[in-house]
Length: 169
Image 1 (cartoon, rainbow, N blue to C red):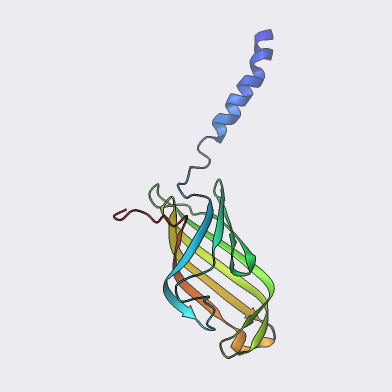
Image 2 (cartoon, rainbow, N blue to C red):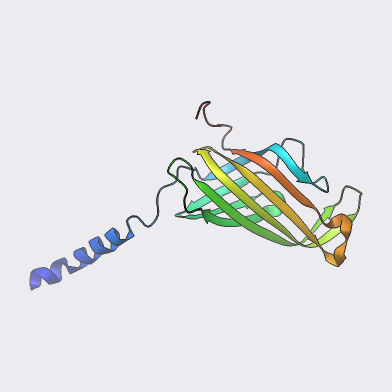
């Protein structure tokens, strides 16, 4: 009886740890800063790209299945998760975020205050220091200003520390 009382905390700890095993799996994607480059412009209604080749940088954080990114466009916080069905060799994740009451200058020179800027990022891990996918940004204007209703859609490549995946992977 005394032995059971002595080992009860140990048994409960082992049981708790064993129940937690298998709930999440390790992902190879590194946390930290990433530089985003445009691979293909799918849509840019208002000329929002900062340059033809570069997008805004981001800082990636991973906690279990949850992914977060502090993204350089308006310092937005994107939050999402690794997607079910991702294989060991093909980790995919998705994130969304928004920024309220943002301003922009449309390509016709119109100054716009929009109610919200919505962002969506789909990503597939290529290796620990690289992922790619599609980024969409939607500006939702006040007062239905047609020239301020802008969307940006790009295929991108995000690379950490200027270290893309080795060729052939």
